[in-house]
Length: 151
Image 1 (cartoon, rainbow, N blue to C red):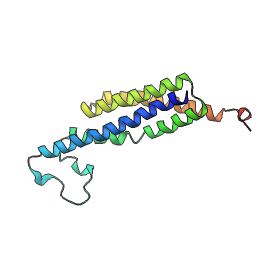
Image 2: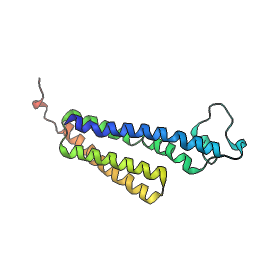
Image 3: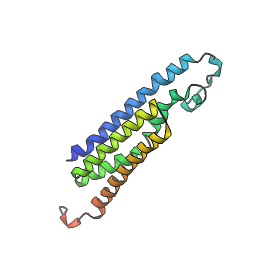
Image 4: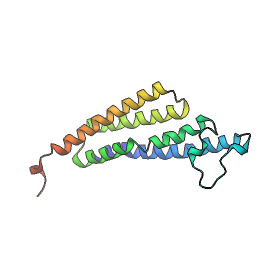
């Protein structure tokens, strides 16, 4: 069951890399379409945030989402590892897949449509799945019977 518990985390890692690659055509395409090149930042060490308000908002959405995939999902990765080490149940695996599916749909929504009510509902649903997983990880560790462990 350990591999089944780790599989959703592996999929979310791959999805995060896909979103990273999504940034390249979105931003560079938008930069190429800027009519007045003088509005583009012209300094050493330009960062993505320097493009805010310079290129269309939609071209920055994948970068915003990529940042989000490095925030809350870090808690998911830790939780999945804890559960994988303590012996996950079928519910844990199902919740992990639900979390990943919701995060992928959230990414697609944010990168393509980005209306806040739907995006927030997807975020809230994934957060609830993560809360349940985290509580189950606490139960699996705090309530573990040390006497059952090999000496």
